Length: 350
Image (cartoon, rainbow, N blue to C red):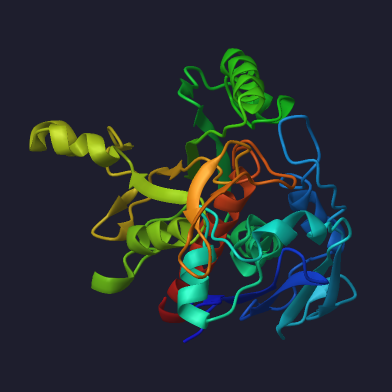
């Protein structure tokens, strides 16, 4: 059980490290005769590509994908789809001082404990760079969702304590944070730059909404749709919490407040977030992920080295101030992969 594969019918295995030659994904179980080109995938990769604004890492990766198998003449063949994305802007020397120490907030200590060896260059397999393969696979999953009219929209709800208060969807791509509130996006930009000057980092909240999902997706008991969605988002390194619909606010509500009345026109409210008893109910699916601050910061931190001796370190290299906004398309990709898998499961029994 390596933990590198996600899904039951649509199975995705990602591979590669932050400072290795390349990263990629193998997607098995994708139906045949779906239109798919490298341009389709690169359109999604462009949304998480580093070095695209002053608010993200200065590492510049073109993130060009090559389809090695599973596609012929612009259509999926039903055989495994193999994707590769080469690393082009690697500067491993910046991590040399970290070879013998464990960075606070990173997977250095736990990877060493598990494997007895670790790739310290940029975090290796634990790096956020791994998510480029997830986004590429998510673009393939969207082709499956297109056959059912399912659309996934992800955006920044909150960053550094600044929360979107209005939702102007057509402006999602008009700011570097994928935030539907222009005023909040401007405030977010100022907050990020102020914290950057302090050598620190920020966390936030990403919200994902799913439109057009039919009722009936999900499996009883252990493979509930909301359970797998939560696991999918929690598998992203920076995510520390997930809530669906009313989420934690449900704990303060009464049953009469939380229950969503059914009417001939549909549900009158959506505290359930589009999922009941682990199965989609046809309403909009609403899910939020709490994103921790980036652990690589330019301020001195206390740690230990591999011999257990106390050390003080300052992390160099090129890092984001926040996982937001680049985590937004990653969250969308994991939701797409989950829904595409459940859609194919449902078609197998329907």
